[in-house]
Length: 150
Image 1 (tube, rainbow, N blue to C red):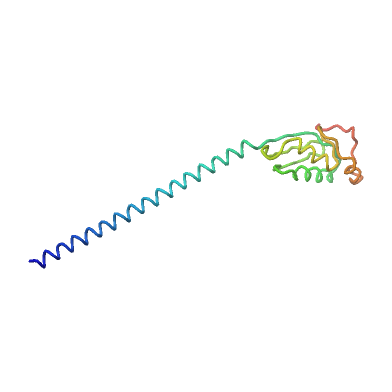
Image 2 (cartoon, rainbow, N blue to C red; image 1 turned 90 degrees about the horizontal axis):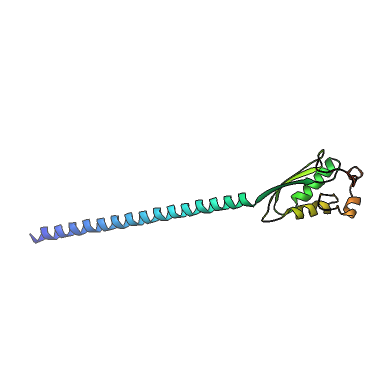
């Protein structure tokens, strides 16, 4: 009889041990799942915040730039694109106008005007650097009275 009682107690202890282990495993699994969901939610929130920040900071401007040809286009666009924060700059040879997209938390319109002027080209707000202008190829030497932003 005592043998059966001992065996019964051992079986009960084994059952309790199994239940305890299963309970701990379940709690652990739930904890991991919860942490993973919190991390995922945090990452999604950070991504949305970054996307909104990027949208808010982007600006677009258009202004006149004097020039003549395809070589001018290359130099003007290179100068504008070289400004930190500029994402795109396209100069229209016929209209003598540049369209610029930039992050206004990193730069401003006047910095873009100055960069183009430093390469030798007049803009609506900045006169081209005379030394840089003199170093331009002959085909790029524009008339300083030329209409811009047509």
